[in-house]
Image 1 (cartoon, rainbow, N blue to C red):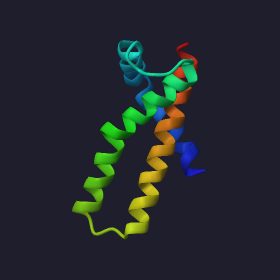
Image 2 (image 1 turned 60 degrees about the vertical axis):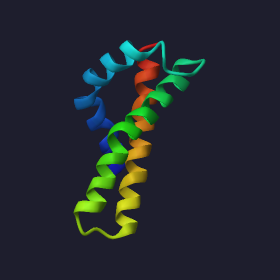
Image 3 (image 1 turned 120 degrees about the vertical axis):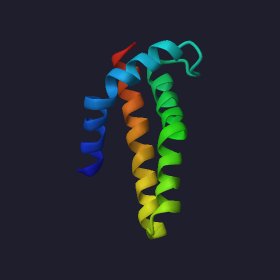
Length: 91
């Protein structure tokens, strides 16, 4: 349920910004179908924003490793799902 809330919050708050980034970079994102390009875009968003943010939380806050890993995996899944939705909506 938490993952579904994160995907919906991404679509609500991050969709306008992500849509513009996807449109600007859609020619350089690899993938043969809109879904694959969307997932690749989601992976790039995770590598640029999600992974550094989660690593920063792990380094700066006294968090258990399992909690930090679960947050990282949740961010990865939400980024990939959000990218797939963007790719499908903007075919």
